[in-house]
Structures are given as structure tokens and as C-alpha cells.
Amino acid sequence: MVITLDGLGHDFGKQCFGAVFKGEDNHLKRLKTCWSSGNSLGLFYGMVTEALGWRISDGEGKTMGLSAYGNADVLYNELVHYAPHVEGSDLVGGYDFNVKSDLINYRHSISEPAIAHLSKLAKQAGREQLAAAAQKLLEDIVIKWVDSLLRQYTEIKIFVLVVE
Image (tube, rainbow, N blue to C red; front, side):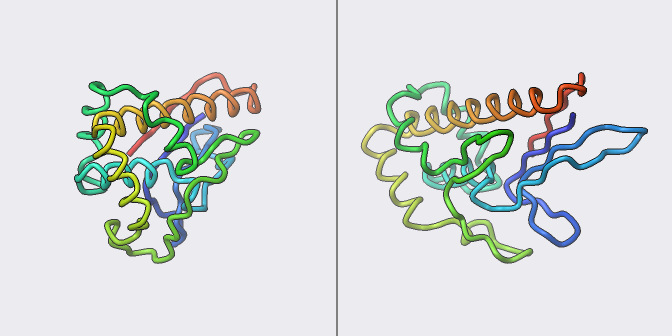
């Protein structure tokens, strides 16, 4: 099983925020695709990165690094409705980033009110708390999703995760 997760990828001219493949006869067979921007873990994490004052698609490593200094429990529940959740073996829900264009400027694709709200939370509780909550939530969702996929596709014995 190969899983890809991206902020905004492309698949034959369509936006693709993640996909699940099965390796078969030296080819990858697509099993699932995440098409809705609300299902994008990358856009969720990018939104938090913007709220922390860094640029999306550039500062996510800083967000991850800062997360080690915070307490995830402080803002975890505040972030839950911004991120997709696992339903069955699908990523669903999450914040609708309303990404429509194939060629977009990431900075203008994410809701300013959401970034303003998260920035306010970071100022009140501390930037490290927001980063820690986002990192923990991301990890929790990915672990739960991968677990559900492995339960659904029991014949698959090898797992690869690609995160950009």
C-alpha cells in the first residue's frame, strides 16, 4: 500500500490532496483519492503554519519543530473542526478551503478568518501550544486513517507513506 498526502497535488488536471494505491505487477493501482480541499491534511497544517506567521508550503518544518516545545492538550479541541476526520476508511469533513483553481497562490487560498482565529489562539495560549496541537492532531488522524485502510485492505502486507 502506498499513501500520498499533499497540500495540493494534481492528478490529470484535477486537484488531488492525497491518494491510496496498491502495488500490483510493477504498477500502482489507485484505490482511493481525496478530492475535496476539506480533506487535505496538508492545507490544514499549512493554515496553522500561516497562523504562526510563516509561509504555507515553506514553514511547515518550523511548525513541526516548534511543536516539540508545546503541550498539545491546550488547543487540541480548538483545532479538531479545522481538520478532516476518519470515517470508515475515508478522510471526510474538515475546513472547506474552497480551493478552485488549478494554479493557485497558496497564501490566498486559505480562509483569512480561520487564520485570524488561529493566530489569536496562538497569541493567547502561545505559538508552541498551537503547533503542538496541530502536530498531534495530524499524527492522530494519519494513524487512525492508516489503521482503517490496513483493516480494509487486509491482503496488503507492505505499507509506504509519502508526505510532501
